[in-house]
Amino acid sequence: MFIADFHIHSKYSRATSKEMDIEHLVRWAKLKGIDLLGTGDWTHHLWLEELKNKLEPLNNGLFIYQGVHFILTTEVNNIYFKYGRNRRIHNLIFAPSFRVVDEINSVLSSYGNLAADGRPTLGLDSAELARIVFDICPDCFLVPAHAWTPWFGLFGSQTGFDKIEECFDKETPNIYALETGLSSDPAMNWRWSELDRFALISNSDAHSPNRLGREANVFDCKMDYYEIIDALKKKDNRRFLSTIEFFPQEGKYHFDGHRNCNVCFSPSETKARGNICPKCGKPLTVGVMNRVEQLADRPENFQPEGAIPFKSLIPLDEIIAEAHNTGKETVGVQREYLSLTQGFGNEFNILLNMPEEQIKKELPQRIGEGIIKVRKGEVDIRPGYDGEYGRIKIFSEGEKKKQMRLF
Picture 1 (tube, helix red, strand yellow):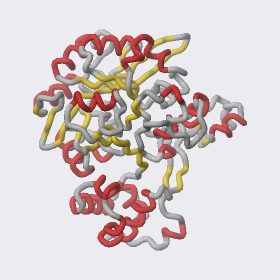
Picture 2 (cartoon, one colour):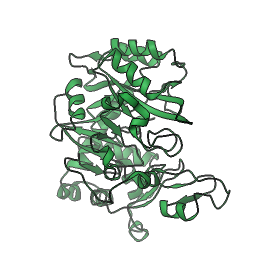
Picture 3 (tube, one colour):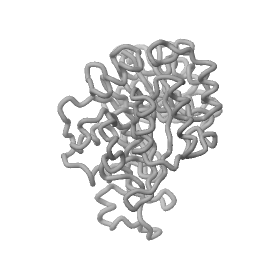
């Protein structure tokens, strides 16, 4: 069994940490318990050169560096006009070799400046992108990224489509998976029968190393590019076991609203106000939950047959921070995080696998209580909206009075 995070970025993407290099990625993958990382950003020449120089190719479409496996992935930003509207769609591309990557880059360079950003902007229809990629190599895999995000998602309220066929045309049968994104989870996607045939994957979209694995995928198959892709294409729940999810309310586009106006509404509240912000009088940014409600043809809590299960988690550093009533970037929290992950294997082992009795016996009391509460879903979340992350609370105000001091 292994955990994979396919969608990340390099230091060559906008708004990313300078530590998004191979060495830091590998260090944090080991701390998190991630066995397979997407490379991200192979369209950028400098990052591609670094990947070629440092990653050791295996004979199965994957690569390795200091014990961590890599799969060649990248995200592109497709901007184009279709069916009377401007479209902005992010897509993930998986490739089995650097030779294939070089061929794809050679063609895509005609549609945008690949050196301008690790996630390049292409004046290219998503359907044409798919055709190009699969013509070069049918073993490639294309996944619409964060499919529900308002501004750059396949079904996004601002620039997306109402049906996947509208986006990919004749290439639709070659699309086998969707990335749910931080603001939705599989249960939300299960409400729309049109999505039943797709594998629902979840990834971190990390812009800094400590955000790796905030969403991820769990497999029980050979560590092999072709078998992983086959498991996704067949939505085989014997090999593709589950996903690890954010609580979707914590995602920054879950509800509707205006960040600058400090206005956050549920779908029903938005409808009652005619989709208009009461402060500025402009249309609200419609979030993921509202968009799901618009397209869903099933009630909440519906689970289709053969659905891949999921677990919702809160990252360990956030649990530690709340246990200590302090910020997650503080020295004390970082020290505690490193102590726990190094002492008990890795973060996912602590959050997913450690028996409750061991948690109670061997972890600091408040941190252990927080992990157990998260496993049970006993959290309180103020939903995110319009680019503002949701705020999550594990401990009530009364419980916080009992919190221990940092040393």
